[in-house]
Length: 402
Image 1 (cartoon, one colour):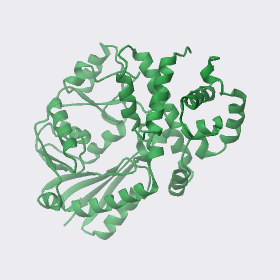
Image 2 (cartoon, rainbow, N blue to C red; image 1 turned 90 degrees about the vertical axis):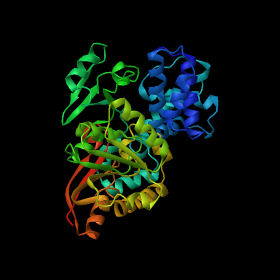
Image 3 (cartoon, helix red, strand yellow; image 1 turned 90 degrees about the horizontal axis):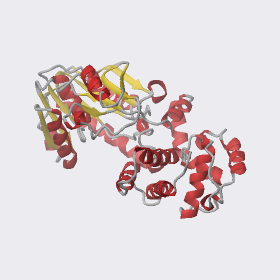
């Protein structure tokens, strides 16, 4: 592999922005990739892949590099980049920038440190302890899977096309996809490419949405003509899938506490050809109470730790805290308690998270059902990254009986 100094500088700038300026990895990369129009697809892939990989293995890289200071100056950034290349088995050039990269020392340290899960898979102590306490030996498999690169998955918009026609249309442009077993609207990209510049995306024929996430709307057991409330809708990813399933028949009400997210959902809905969507800003309990006893189906895609999507957001490992996780657990309980009455008697709701922790998932549902005898647990689905190859998700379907 031939290294180019300007690409290495771009990776270093991204790493600095993520760890020193506390920027989200995707936003830091987006800004840097926009800074040079001369970079081609390979250049951009090099910057993105190395940045994300270094974020994934940040603790391991720092540990084997044995830096005397935590300061991320230019010299240390090059040393860390070089250390990562050594760990990957990539030869590095004899540049001045890599003068502090001691390959033998790195390999020696790695042999010692790879026996420790928290170092090998680069986890903060508290997160490794939490994961093992909740999942036991299963945690070993999950941390390995969560450090893999996330695949790019599309959800076909059945309001505008079908899976076979979309796959054929994209293939004509050199974009090869394959179906995903067990996920009827999903196509997985064979090779990472920019999908957002395609006419098919601009015309609303698909959305980029992980296969696990696509299972949630299907799990809701929707039928056209129903009144459906998506109570934590965000920017509308699952809302749009619900609309596709209903074929624009019935009514979908999307709720969120952030107006900008609802505005984005409306924009995406227009592109997708959705005509049965109404958005409402949650301004307090009044907004929720007005909807009591009105929904045939209710989706509660609640705030969570996001541990199931770490392969997509690797910097979350370093930004999460136990305090934050305890806070979202409180929000989850409150949402279940306050929003469950939106369901009509006989209606069904799905409680969903993109977490793999039982304390955010099964235990929340068990606690809710125990306290509400008129709500009956029906079924749950646990999607683990180590088993699916996709994001980690949890979903439970609950029926209101009276």
